[in-house]
Image (cartoon, rainbow, N blue to C red; front, side, top):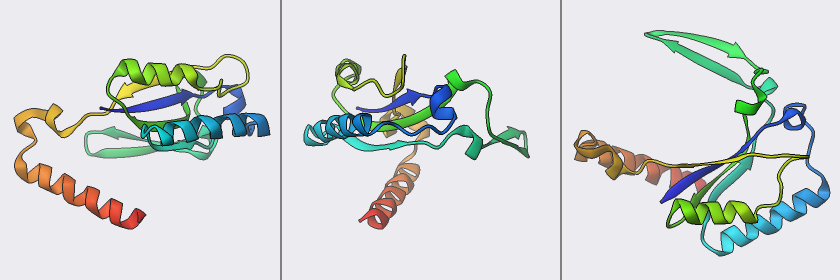
Length: 142
């Protein structure tokens, strides 16, 4: 099972404040443990929403809203992609994480859909297309 583990933003991350050297070291150790355990597939921090944009879809129309976005508690400051056996295992790993923010922090865990979750609508042709794209991505990363 794959999970996206998201660190919720706060006023400090949205202000562009960088983590302390100690927090970077602590997170580095945590990430190292995740990698050694075969759990971590990816992980990154994100710039504040002031440097981002949202694209709104309304039928065939598209409109762009530039950041910053006001609902800080709904924004993401960073993420991991983990592969674990269960939600319970992901929760146990999150409990070991150093506090990623100054003060209180929220980390959200969401399961990533797998091909089999889509049922018959995800035809063999669509599955083949997805696998081809994954192979292309992997080749570019190598």
